[in-house]
Length: 512
Image 1 (spheres, rainbow, N blue to C red):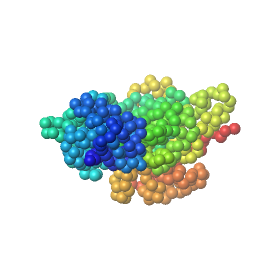
Image 2 (tube, rainbow, N blue to C red; image 1 turned 180 degrees about the vertical axis):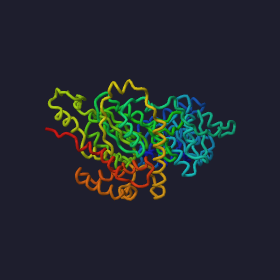
Image 3 (cartoon, one colour; image 1 turned 135 degrees about the vertical axis):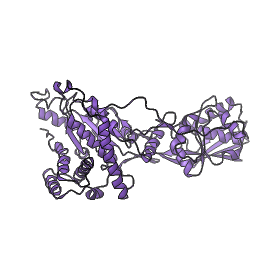
Image 4 (cartoon, one colour; image 1 turned 30 degrees about the vertical axis):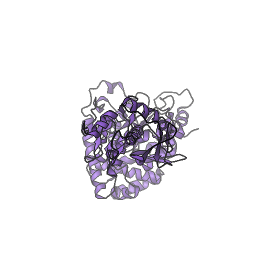
C-alpha cells in the first residue's frame, strides 16, 4: 500500500505541486528517497528517523521507499522533512491516512521532533488555496500562511506529537492570525539634510513617479543621506504589491515570525557584489538584490566601482521588470520592478569639479572621463534623472533645520501617485501604478504636451540626440511633474524641467 502527502517544489515564486509517496514493503532494511532530490532532501531520512524516535515511534524493520513525484522535477530544500514524516506515520498507522487528504504540507524537522521554520510558506499557502487545500506548516510560519486567504485551513504545530494529537482529537490547534511587522524605529527624515534644496526636489520627483535617479557629486555632499531618506517619502505598498514583495521575501527566507510589512524594500548592496548576488543565481537560483528590491528601491552607492558586466546585467530587468535565471535543467523567473537610485563621485579622486583642484592622475577632464567610462551608455540611457550634487558649504550647515521634512514631501508624493493610479486604472492597464512603469505607446497619449511643449521636445530631441527610450523617459518625467502640480495637461515648463535632468548626460567629458 502507498500513502500520499501533498507538498510543493519552488520554481521562482511559483509553488508546483509535488506528491510524496511512501511504500513500506518486506525486504532489506533501508530508507531510500528518490525523485531527483538534492543533498538537503536526501539527508531528510536521518532527520525523519530521529524525529520519529524522539516522538515515541519506531520505524519498522522493512524497506521504506519515498518517491517525490514528478520525478523529473528537481527537489531542493529541507521543507520535505515534514511531508515525508507524515507519510511514513500514515503508512505505519500512527495518524489516520485520510486525515492528511486535502492538506499541503511543508516543514523541517529537528532531531527532537519539533518542526522548525522554512522558506516559501506564503507561496505554498497561495498555491494550496488555489487547489482547494489546507496547509500544514511550522508554528513560526503560521501567521505568514494566514495571509494567503481567510478561508484556507492552516495548521501550525510546534512538533510531530502536537500534530498527531490534533488528528486524534485530544488537542485542537487554533488557526493562526495574520501578523504585521512591528517596525522598531522611524525612517530617517529629510529635515536632517541642510541645503541641497535642488537635490531634495529631484528626490521628490523620483519618488512621485518611480523614476531612476543618478546623483553625482564630491564626497560628503550628502548623496547617500538623500538616498537613505527616499523610503521616508514613498507611499506604503498597495495590497497587491505587498503580496508580490512578501512572496519574494518568503522564498528568500527574510520573513521573521510570519509578520509582513507594508514598507517598501530598500536594498543597498556593496560595490563588490557579484552578478549572481545582484540579479540572482547560484546553485539553487536564489533571488538577487534586484528581486529583493521589487516594488522598492535598489541603491547602488559608488556606482562606477561596481564591475561593468555586473552593472550591464541590470539593463534587462530595468526594462522588463523581471529577471530570468536560466540553468541547464530549468528556468526561474523572479519579479524585479525596482527603482534604481545611484550615487557616484565625479572622478576617482572625487574632487575634480572643485574650483582650483588639480587631479594627481592628470588633467581633471581626463580623470573624470576615465572614471565615468566605466558606466555604459545603454545603462545611463535608462536613468531618468541625472543631477549634480554640489558640496555643502559651512553657511548651509549653521542654518537651523529646514521647515519642511519627509512628512510634507510624502503628502505631495502620495497625491501624485494617487493621480497616476487612477489614470492607469481608468485606461485599463493592469499592474501599472506609476509613470515610470507606463508602456511607451501609452505614455505618448497620457503625457501629450501642449503646442509649446511639443515644439520644445521636438527641437530638444534633435539637439540632444535623444534615443527613442530617452524621448519616452522625458515624457514620463514631464507627466510626473504635471502630476505634482496637480495639472491634467503637460505644459512647456514641465518638458523643460524634464529635459534639464537629461542634459547632464550630454556634459559627460570625453576621454582624451
